[in-house]
Image (cartoon, rainbow over all chains, first blue to last red; front, side):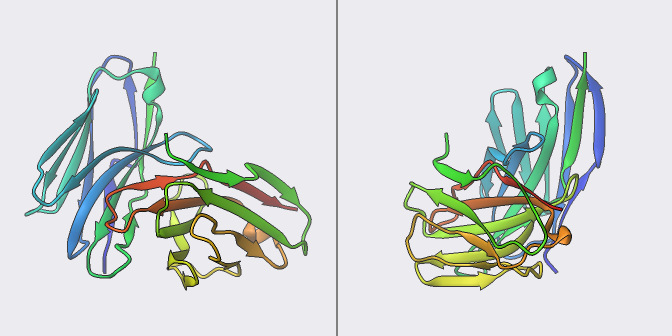
Length: 114
Length: 112
């Protein structure tokens, strides 16, 4: 069964600190992995996307890594800001069908305190 | 910024009413999706479409229906709303290769 597991479920950090969010998946055959940021009551917004051959991708203070062998990904946030408070969702796409299905993790709820 | 729009953003209706949630995208994407998301929970796929006149049910059983008469438009209809339909509904689209996927802002539906 294709699954995406994220940890931790929730995280509280102080402004200016770094943090790392984890994503493990069993989706196969793998196509790509995305990290999304979802503010409360809004739609998810894409942060990074990585294909099989990519093992790191940065977007400002966000850096995602991918280990396709162990089927693990991480999202590292540097020098956190209050506006980083949101849910971060790992989404894996397969290529086993014409659709390219998207499989979602439950997300990590990040809270940044001043 | 993604060109995918959902209306309305918020909707409160009475039980038994028929409603249609609108979703439009101007990116020419073939694939479109509807997801249901309860607070603090993951997104569940309820409908998807490969293209015009193509619709399929997703993983989560839903009493809603969809149509895809035009590429840019993918409305979702509930014939008779119930309190159990209270949730956030998110529409998304992606290009044929699946490398781009964008979400709308969502419709928060409350059935009283």
